[in-house]
Each structure stands twice: as C-alpha cells, then as structure tokens.
Image (cartoon, rainbow, N blue to C red; front, side):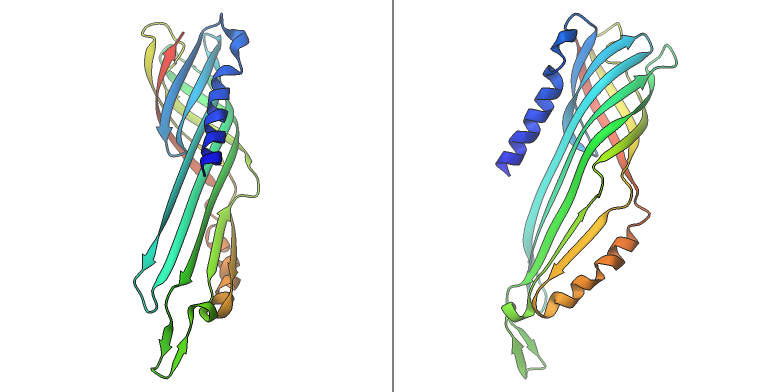
Length: 219
C-alpha cells in the first residue's frame, strides 16, 4: 500500500512539473477534493476563452472486521481509485462559467472477501469447520481504463484578478458498466456462480460522477 501511495503522489507531482517549458505563460496550480478523491490540477491558458488542464486525483480505503452471525464471518475490503487526465476548458462568456471535455486514465477497483472464522453447527447434529465451509472473494473493476469526460463548472484559475481562486466542477466519466468477478472455495464455492447476476444488476451504472471543489494559485 505504501508503494501504491508513493506512485500516485509522484503522478500528481509530475502533473505539475512536466510542463515547465510554459513558465512564461499564464498558468496555475491547484489542489482539489471530490468524488474521485484528492489531488491537483495544472492549468495553462491557451487564449482568453480556452484553457488546457492536466488533472490527477486518487482515493484509497481499506476496511475489515467481523460480522456477528452464525457462524461469525470475517471480512475485508479494499477500494482504490486513480484518475489522471487531460482536459480542455472552454469559457463561452466573460464570467467564470466553463464547459469541459477530456480523456482520463481511470483505474477503479473494489476487492473484498469473506471467510467464516468459527465452526457452524447444523441442527445440533453436525459441525462444519471453517476450512470446509470455505471462503468467498469478489472484485469489481472496469474493462477499459481510458474513458471520456464531459462536465461544466465555475472558476478560471488563470483569469485576471485575485491569484487565489475557488473552482467548482461537475461532470461524469463514461466508464461503461463494471465487471464483477467472484471466486469461492469449500461449501461456499457455488455462490461464486452468481457473479454474472451481480454484473447484470450493474448494467445501468455506466457513468462515474465527478464533483470537485478546488483552490488554485495563478503564477
């Protein structure tokens, strides 16, 4: 996990410094947080109505515990989201309203598992040990990690005025529907055959919502 965290930090830092040849142009850097995690932007002014922007965000969450049942079930889950993209912001009016479009590398994974951690007694006549009961793991991800993005927002990081600006954006990435993979062992193994049913139930979830609130500084 530390290696993954370091890699993502380096990606975001790289977003800010790979375009140093534009040092004499109007540009801004910023931090933001939202539905895709925390990260930052580098914005370069093409002209009065057009900005080019590179963006990077990440999110990671781990949880585990024991579900009180008969038998008790130990579970764990990991969720990782990494989004790095190139965006063009168009400002049709003199105010800060913007229309945005771009391409993202969007890596979204949820991985989890469950394992009984005590024997199960059936009708007080038979006992099944945890190793015989087995375990179950499931993963949710997307087949394509290169996805289009469209959105709108308010705020122009490189506009005249205050160097420090607040920015808001709302949009979505078209990810298509997710894949669901399940693997099971022991007596629980047949449950894994329901992975297609779960996948079918997620067919309508083809967009990843993007809502970000950020703060930028113009050079």
